[in-house]
Length: 118
Image (tube, rainbow, N blue to C red):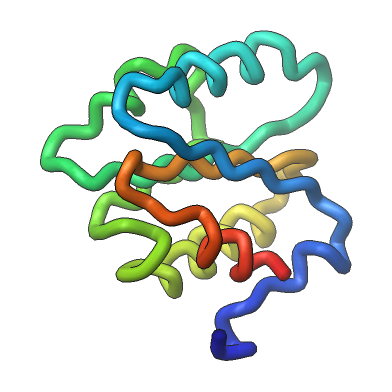
C-alpha cells in the first residue's frame, strides 16, 4: 500500500470500527444501537453504498452532519483515496469526534480498509 494513503489516526488516538457483512446481516441495526447508546461520545459514521439507492442512510435514525456517504464504489478497492479524504474531512472539522464507524457494503473486503488505518 502506498504510504500516502495511510492515515495518522493511531497518532491521534481515535478508535475506528469497521462494520461489514452481507445485505440484511444487521449492520445498520448495530449502528443504530451504537448511536442510541453512545452516551456523550461524538460519533462520525462513514456509510459506503454500492447501489443506486442509499437505503441504509434512510434507516439510520440519528443522521446528522457527522455522517458521510461514499457512494461511488466499494471503499475496499475503488475509492480508497475517497475514504482517506472523507476521514480527513471529518478530522479537520471544528467539532472533534471521539469515535469513527465505517459501514461497508456487503461486497467489501475489510482487510484493505483496515490497512488504510495502520
